Image 1 (cartoon, one colour):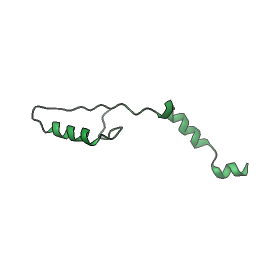
Image 2: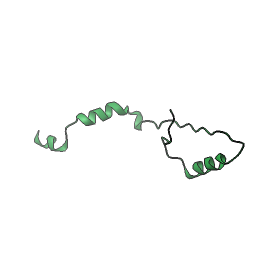
Image 3: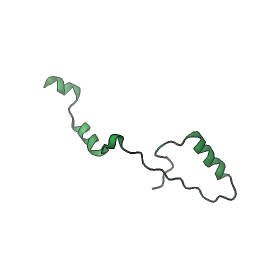
Image 4: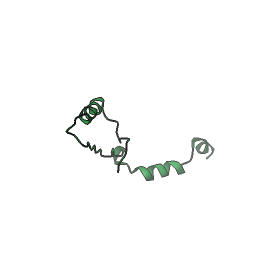
Length: 64
């Protein structure tokens, strides 16, 4: 997948290094690959968000 936005923001020195290397006449292409950040605590995000969406709100809990 190609994206101009990284999964995780690059650190200032990583960004600087890539800009520095990009100005070299001997470098034709730079490819940066990032792994998607792991879900917090190994949590499967989609089912978790679906449960939150279907959960009762605070006002509904007071009535019951």
